[in-house]
Length: 495
Image (cartoon, rainbow, N blue to C red; front, side, top):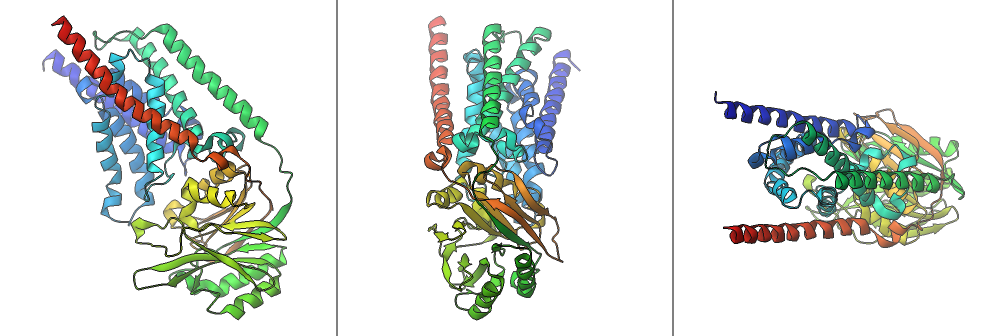
């Protein structure tokens, strides 16, 4: 084999290996593995492969392998059985990454890697912002989700939203990546025409992202405080009700009485725990149960509207037998064929225990629904849910960020018996039952829950850092075109 061909295949093999290392590191950083420190360095091997090791013409193969491989390990188990198009989604994203990133290396070489950190962070989080609008994606796979178990580290999310934390994570990755490229150049020069990185620029970027990380940690520790608001005793009923879900209503009655005996003031039933609207069907039964337990019952139910549509709703029943209102699921699971005929309102109920709001299951995977309920004054959000086993170790973690973003507590009850949890306004998981495969016996997940305040900058301004990232992403798309035109003009002048 000619030496140049041998060199080509060697670079290809090493580049593919480094990209695969990134895919593995990213996969391990997310639940169920939850090796969260890896998210801070997970993209670095990919960057070395893309910008130094792989031949230029196929340099974007690095991001295709890293991102596609990670999503293959992360998304494929989640959407198993949801349809062929979901099973092939990671491959589709890998192909998009390959073509979308095909000119990235050339851009950085034209601009001397001056924008390497900002370009990488803004483009990644800008794309996360776009994904947040897609019904089949939401906040699934956001890099910030890896830190759900670290309340000491995530408190600035109440100011900067989950997108702000994503920008920090990606800035650290690209800052370290820039340093890795600088060190690589000092040892190897695989492409002699690549201009050397400016040592001062590399140092400044690395010091800058380190300073941002230190400031973030300091601010997070300052914001993390013991709750001072009143508490209420809330219970989530955790039970695999089988198929159909409403076959377990009698067991939910028993668990409700058990929770009341243990002092629960608010008892959350899961999503679709009841067939039919309890305000119309078996109404006296539920009113007697509320009166007997002297608790507020949050009832998740499903009621058909037509043969194709149904109402996936939750209502709150007071101990006095009054139905306080109805909430319709805001984000139906469209890839599973679900619809919601009563979405679009966000009621909050004034009670002696505090101001109560509800959202349902998939709503917690988007930043907007919990925020709308919090803006309407909710201090505690109650979340009926119906999950499948493959998401049990992942889904409840999204509550952590909805809690911190809005400084409210959340109580999630699951009728799949897979994951129920109670989260305080600072994102601390104060009670949980995580039983992938379903708990067919049933249990009560209960805790004294501090009421939230809903007074955060993120609650008021929404995903403002996400919009900034999206604007930055658009800027670099335009700037790439500008730099190409300049390069062609200079080449023409020299020719």
